[in-house]
Picture 1: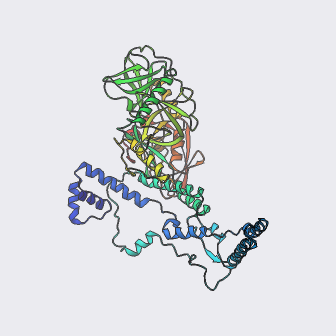
Picture 2: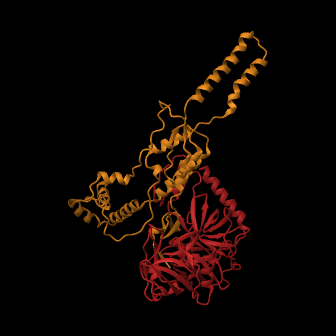
Picture 3: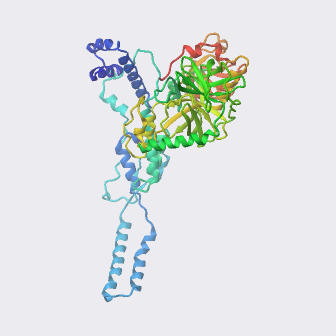
Length: 269
Length: 342
């Protein structure tokens, strides 16, 4: 089968054939391989249409970036390091000066510099993460940033107002004419099929990767990573193993497939 | 090359270690002089249990693992749902021991198991049990166990599975189609490169190329299914019966409701007035959350017992009582309905 013929089958599976290609498509279906390919493409298109929507936090990378950054810059004011200059002063005072009393000034100057930095930091308004976001529904964990004191000039451009999330479906509706639907359901008998294994695979891999990311120290806040993993793993997934009639050429056993959405199959009993 | 040598050495050592404990009631099935499958004596009357994938057409000979003598065997009965068959010896086979003991329960998770294949024993791991399975062509539910073998297995279909106590707990029925995708998934999740990508259709593809050891994911019927099948084959009728109501059902993708798609004429469901499109809400007072729940309830029902269903027909609730029948009463259950993913 040529690439052109394959493209023809793809167009037919998604209902985008024109009248010229329609006849060529009918002739192509006489080939059993082409028919099998077409049926698999129809299944793929149907499964793609029936695929669950991803959580809103995964619509755009921009929202993910904002969520990650808002947690990454979460201030951590630990009072313990304030005492470090004092410790340095004490340490410098107890050490025996080798080069004269001038050298003892360096620890003291360092301590004064640290205190100046502390004062500057404490006086700078820093963004904090609003705890109310914890009550937001899953998939909308976008941090709302507010300064502790209303500054005349924001410290840095990190906290834009949350932009309204636009779902891809809504965008398609804006750009496509409703009178010309992209997908025309096939009149062929519907043969149920599992979603492509790659979808399940990617979801699992993403979930595992995010959990791994949460376990590793890094700029990503652990809670963010865990919540993202929870969003991914919260997608409904109940496995059903479908044991086919045909045997594997490698193992000789029946071929099994794991179906993530048992709703696509018919069960007898 | 060295990995192959080491694998062969390990297999030989395992076979030697297991030779002492080799079940004397396991026979190797041969066709045209080549080992094609394996079967186990499950009844004192001389019935050998095997999987259909290990029983090719033509004359079959059986020999014990340690013996050299052979005896002709032929298929006595088969179960369309589980694809298990029983063979009967046409003549006595010297060296054949007592019937194999069936395990009363599944092995513990993570325990090591032995799969007896025509080429020898293979050590695997019992990963999980109670996995819902849909057996083709009958389209019926059966609980499955998942096993993993950290190697590439050749001709492992129909292998007999023994637990640590030497009890038969399953027959290896199926292997995961995309063996390579499992390895690829692991690699991808670990941040690595998956080699061949997510290529589907691994028929004839050597899975060693995705990792140093390879991986075979296999599924076996649960001990509960095995006991039912053996009891049926060894019973007076010599057939295996599965409980049935004569319905085909599916699950509403939107709300998870269990919907009857087809009701076979003359079936208990038809006699009770059930129709296609009815929603099954609960079984014996237990609310259903998925089609699998309904399948599990049907699988565990006793033939001849009464099952009470609460259904909703166009929103109107109804309660019906049905007498569970045998699936053998409805040949359509195993022959006509073959929808589903291939």
